[in-house]
Image 1 (cartoon, rainbow over the protein chains, first blue to last red):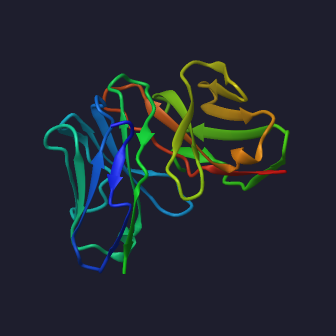
Image 2: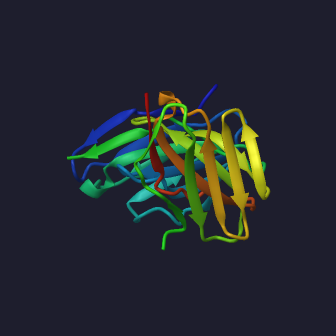
Length: 114
Length: 112
């Protein structure tokens, strides 16, 4: 597609519920990143894929967070047993594989855990 | 100490003035440097990239990089109200598996 597409745009989850956030990157972008952004702060790195390989998941805050990109295109970030501290905007970004390219971000998913 | 430090602001300048945004970073392995603009309620948008020491100009925007001082800045000339946003500095290592580390951003307000 022309841009990075994320869905849903907004998600309200009850504490303890599982959620799945979807990201469809720019066609041809092999690098895909997930970031978490709290209000008033910069994006915090969660995980990184190059094609289907998850090269870095050092930013995932707990084992309740899981990400996959099985066919090297669409990615899903799953959060199990959501907690209130998980409330944030989750940003997906894609990039050319060429080193030194910046990111194109999706519109984000605003997750609110009640 | 955070990996990327930016003055949180808010920075307020009158329309037509020069806005100066500063960023310092701790990772000497950083090779690429990006500035993103984020309007309230929107996602970040890439506006400038710089890779070599010195200045890089693009329209009203000039990025300045000093790797020895681990310092990068963004100057906005002839500031417009539409420039009012949060500006995020994001260094990136020059590796195949590099990820950008973002600062918390500087919020700029341009007053008409």
